[in-house]
Image (cartoon, rainbow, N blue to C red; front, top):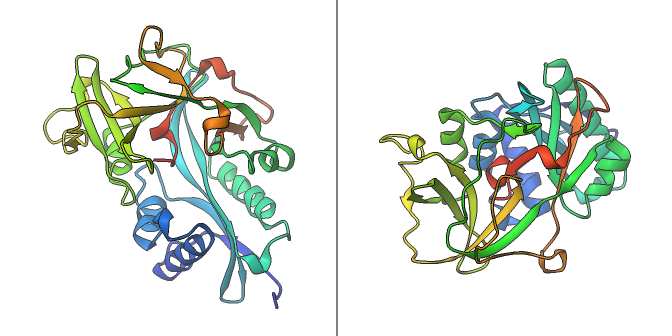
Length: 291
């Protein structure tokens, strides 16, 4: 039987990393690759800062877990630090007790007190209503998903963007060192494109499009192996009004064809109630954890 639960801020000792990994694997399955190596990389090695999260314990047993990781973004014209909502997991013995909402609210309080300005995340169709109704998130927009052949034209600079992730070289190197993924690159006149394999054979997803200047010798991009495939079927997901699709062999994937439509959600911690205009958001696969 479940005893009295107590919550505490996420710890970073090896024992707690192992406990979190065991819970994530038990909830999401071995195929998600959330072993202790992944948790260590994600929670402890991020150059922007260690993870911000909460655990609920029943004695020595981890009952529930919620985590966010620090990110940097250009927000309404200024650089800001926020957190990206990532994993939530509740052991089956403790479900139905409101632990997710409890841990999430405590995490956002901790993040705000630590000086973080916002929470951003990508929620699937089943989890979106809980974020909106119980945690006061804004549904910014469903992510656009397109599939096609050939490299699409890269996005352009958008100085009027209200939200756009910012990536230093060290942050990009950390992101591309994800132990659960294997990235490849292509290079052309438009810059360097990073790809990851999907669970559909022969389909590669565009993770990021970066300026050619960032692929100098020794850089994280230069260390990636070339894609090496002549013309794979490619996938793109995100929000970016500067991407040009007209006249290219790409089609928008309808919701019915998606395994689960993904929604960009946002909550402002600095100015509660402030929202994002989806037409002024730039967001790509590299900016969250799907690939």
